[in-house]
Image (cartoon, rainbow, N blue to C red; front, side, top):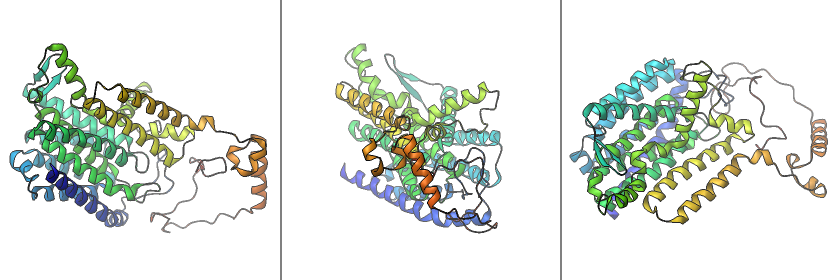
Amino acid sequence: MGQPVREYLLTLCVTVAVTYLLTGPVRKFAIAVGAMPEIRARDVHREPTPRLGGIAMFGGLCAGLLVADHLQNLNGVFELSNEPRALLSGAALIWLVGVLDDKFELDALIKLGAQMISAGVMVMQGLTILWIPVPGIGTVLLTPWQGNLLTVALVVITINAVNFVDGLDGLAAGTVCIATCAFFLYAYRIWFGYGIEAAAPATLFAAILMGMCLGFLPHNMHPARIFMGDSGSMLIGLVLAAAAISVTGQVDPDTMALFAGGERNATHAMLPVFIPLILPLTIIAIPMTDLVLAIVRRTWKGQSPFAADRGHLHHRLLELGHSHSRAVLIMYFWSGLIAFGTVAYSVHSASMWIVLAIAALSAVGLLLLLLPRFTPRAPRWAERLVPPRYRHAERAAEATLQVDAAAEPEPARPIAAGVSGVNGATAIGPRSRFPDRRKAGSSR
């Protein structure tokens, strides 16, 4: 078992290195070709930032697959299965459409059609759902049409879920990386714990996807120097969906001997183990929740489900008073809690400690969400020792007035177009629709 772990680690490191090293040149290329759209009303960044980060991520995907193909143990994945080639074909198509969208802003229906075609390309090459496990019933064999439609639907939903959550610096890449790490542990357990070779492709896809996200994150953390764009968000969504489909559709539950010992025992044994198989999207529950809420919200208002707005979960965290970085970390926390909690419960479903730990961490998460509503106030004798935001309202106002009176404001200077900003993008002046979050009462 040690040798495959080292090979997975090598594949992960190569993917991280290639993605990280390519992102810098890709950023310069994006600026040169003008893939740096103006700030929109729903955006939270304050200056134009280049996109096309998906180019570097696709390079990392190709490098990871190429290295794995030349390793002793992982080479069998390519010899015994056509799924890596199916993934690469579908990923190349969706990535190309994403690159065109980052540059020319394609219509939403065109992107939806491209997502369905990419899923169809993978289906034609064998990456499809053949059966699904159902608690209390067993394995339900699907007809070709049922399997193909379910596969296409799963790919489209996952791609759009990841695309919807890509609204803050480092949010999409970090959330997917955390969920994929939990998924890797689960798929690896199926492969080596039960000796099922059919889980090997999903394990490889998860390792490569983690490398793509980890290599891109240093460039994308706040303040982001480059965005992944649709070329990156749709790409990692498709790879994540392919990993889930590979496990769900290719691993036969009967080979895990879970249906012995009576119907009640079989149901009890099957339910926790197959939670990630029956509902693979639980590992991206945060993006999925955001997607469902966005569709309901926009449809209720009479808008298109693909219409952009500022009602996503990360926007609401900012409205609550969280800083940009803290909002991202809170989303990381919930993503990790759901993903790793699901995997832990699937391994030890009879342990009450796991349930209690998940409940306790959920309470901590709720407290973090409401933290700006309960800002602690220092006692009056210690107000001079703490920042103004922890003082009482009268004293905080006096301190702010004293600071404003002591500091002479510097007159604003016009910035000419073409002057490079801190992130290398074209600098812009202040916009009235973006509130200044960096004042004395802010947490940033």
